[in-house]
Image (cartoon, rainbow, N blue to C red; front, side, top):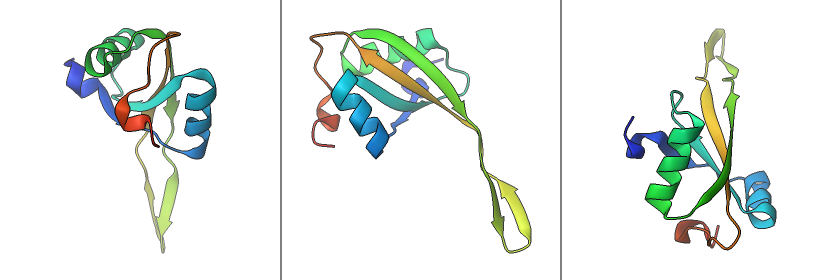
Length: 96
């Protein structure tokens, strides 16, 4: 798996913003097939920050209705990436 295919997007919510400020943890949506080693390598290569630990979770898609028709959103994987002490946060997350 290529490094650029692992990270899909950062997850920016109130909860992830609080986590990022208090414990230097970034949250990303990642590829379903990516493992912790792939995620760590991608963050260190693309963002230039050293990673202390990686935790992953699979968010199961909800069932949504449009009138009488029911559909299902896809499952997706997210990764909680904790940076080492002394590492700075990426620039695109500084003001968020």
